[in-house]
Image (cartoon, rainbow, N blue to C red; front, side):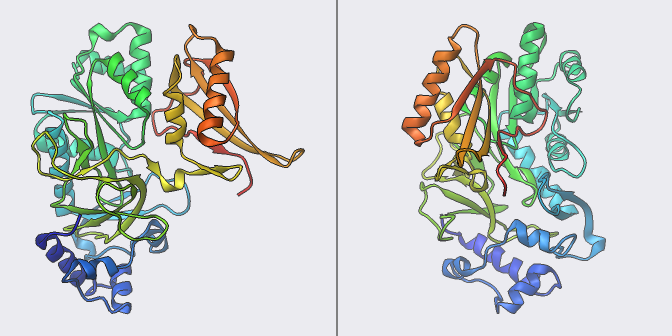
Length: 413
């Protein structure tokens, strides 16, 4: 998807503004002799920006306006290396709320809804983004934050929440608790808006069924405002993203070259009007594709396919590259297996080989030994890897209020 004239002019204005500042990117563009863009070809020559840049510029090296214009900072939830700090102007905060309200509207949420917000508040962008969008829409915010499941369920029943916002992992935990406690008839949920991590089809179906709700995928990342830059619609055919605020291209992660619409690759995002910390060609490491053509819902905003995973989620065993999404696909083919699993990878010195142990949950009605054998054979035929499989009863693996950690690699880095 090429930049349209408005977007090209917006990118040009961002560059011209940046090179007048002493910010990290202002210096980079000045030193590279970049003074603007007037064509797609110019844009395609711009250097990528990355999380490594933001860590290098820590804490506020990417700030592109004077201090007195900054009203808030947010930080990424990542646990590796220095945190990434993103400064926001009042306009950035408002733009984000507008995009988020648009997400709610796309999901059919109105000002009559009561939105229970379970993602975290604080430096993380999630909770406050969900709340700002809710207030912009004029709906009732129930700002719970994460955890305290007893209180969550009490409020859900007493306040008759109609919309649940959460990570998919926490939505699963709540669905299981509602099921376990026999509360299904006492809740009033109609919709769920879930983001922050990818989730399997099996998990989606379970949450949909157990909570009796429509579910929507929301997309975003701290570096680019936060969640709310895109969401799926009632057609459930990809996520519409707001191309009046961001431009998205898909690149081949190895070559860095843009790929045609419809082809899978890494999502790269350019902020078109962000003031506090504009980012041009930011590599997200998220793997997806732009869906060509118009959506049946009639909205003209372009669409991204559901994020398949992250290029840095990939793990390698016996020379084979694997993604969690491939594991989830295999588990989705096996009767009685839940969406929950974890993978432990270690190196066995005695045989000088990597060992992969996959632990999965299964319903009591199926034979655990036969189920384990089926999963092992599917791994072997589809991924050319033979793991050790442990099958445990549903509910055995730990649940989380945050993002689930699926792959634990015990090998030395």
